[in-house]
Amino acid sequence: MPANADKIDSRGPSHFIRHMVDQDLAAGKHGGRVQTRFPPEPNGFLHIGHAKSICLNFGLAQSYLDAGYQGACNLRFDDTNPEKESQEYIDAIREDIRWLGFSWQGDVRYTSAYFQYLCDFAVELIRLGKAYVCSLTPEQAREYRGTLTEPGRDSPSRDRSIDDSLDLFARMRAGEFADGSYSLRAKIDMASPNINMRDPVIYRIRRIDHHQTGEAWKVYPMYDYAHCISDALEHVTHSLCTLEFEDHRPLYDWILQALPDESLNSACIALGNKTPDTDYVLPQQTEFARLNINYTVMSKRKLKELVELGLVSGWDDPRMPTLSGLRRRGFTPHSIRNFCDMIGMSRSESIVDVGMLEHSIREDLDTHAPRAMCVLRPLKVTLTNYPADKNEILQLPRHPKKDIGHRELPFGNELFIDRSDFEEVPPPGFKRLTTGSEVRLRGAYVIRCDEVVKDDAGEVVELRCSYDDQTLGQNPVGRKVKGVVHWVPAAAAVPAEVRIYDRLFLNENPDDKASGDFKNCLNPDSLQVLTGCLAEPSLASAAAEESFQFEREGYFCVDRVDSAPGKLVVNRTVSLRDSWAKISG
Picture 1: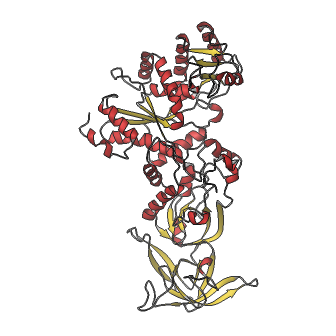
Picture 2 (picture 1 turned 180 degrees about the horizontal axis):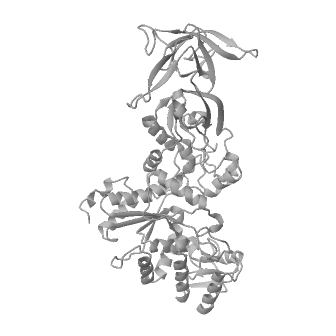
Picture 3 (picture 1 turned 30 degrees about the vertical axis):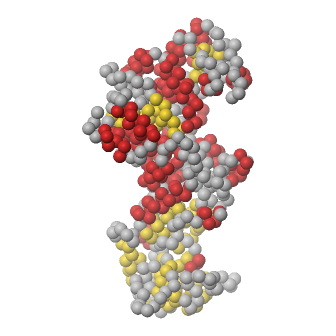
């Protein structure tokens, strides 16, 4: 055991799973190995809830590796339901994990790569009298299964002979039968209080091509059967999953204990996942609370429904809680990993306030994002006493607290401020520009509004102002200016499309049955597209996914899909401060 074993707890957040692993290592249970796995189904994009599992499985393995143990995490796609799976989802999941900053051990793994082993083990269960081919239809099987308060009934096929079951299972695999006509079931206990133990189906007929194995298979294993054996074949030490699988753990253990250890051990060696001299210990399933966030839907099925109905622009819509959506909105890997650390790991279900996620990205961007100015609703300002042929280049810091250089802003007699920074009849407490009053232009001069120009409809279209050439970057002694406004130079401003995103749902719990269909809770104002915006010239060369704090407006990032050279599209990641409680309260 490594000399620094007593320091393991200092590597990463402390929680009950880490304590369990520490105890296993101290007891020598796995010979200094911590082998985890992340087993997503490739039937949709990953969301923020999966990030918690990713950080746990990959992060835990890495922390023990850093502490001198044999720490590793596999990426294994649970691809047992080809009807709902696709290569698009596989590619997206791999990209999301890499983006978060994690890497898996060896090659990407697939449950489908173990189909022959799973099939052979199913035959072995039949030979041992622990599985049988059932003739009940899916509807009949549900009827025989019983309820949470009533025991199930034995299938008429339960006493089928071993030879008959072997023959029928071989013919199922050969594709002789229609979908649903037969299934292979484990023979456990139809009277069990745990409904998962009532002779569960472990194989069903699906005459459909698989994205990895093509048309080779006509039968596919069920998740509960394939998952535990795949863990064993990969020599996983700790199988970590969310609490909804707690009632499935007895089945997980039953299947592994029903199969001879020597069979699992031999297959594990044949796959190169262990050496003959390494002790073989069955994996242990441990559950933790899944991540629930208010104002958010965390079901892949429901997120897929939003995509398919066109209620969002895709899985990477910045309003979606998917990792690709959060990435496109401007969330950083660090902010998501920090959020997962903040919420911790427990066995008690709870709901996390979405404000914690927003706080995490706001804190990260406040520290690292350079500053810039962008006028969302431009209003022209002409400085009547500034020489028309004069041009200055002002130097503004890229960050107020970090020395990361300066950006250059040309200054002339025409510029734009935001329309919200001017009021002819100002409300009480208004500290921006009004007729006859002064404000400071950020990083530039103090100006005074002398005249208001309106169009035929009476709308303000231009302000004619004068500037004080003694106020560049400072206030003269004894002079007070009410406020500071941001601006962009008229001649060099960069046209931009700005997308203001808000929360996708209005209800705190969109899944609440009392609210009816979750789609009825959609926020109609979750996206506002502003065209005709103007950004400072430094943003002309901004790269995709680059983040900025637009002064006085919030944190924004360059859209990774729609932005291109000569076309600046930015997404608001988060406001400067949380105003949701005031608006919705």
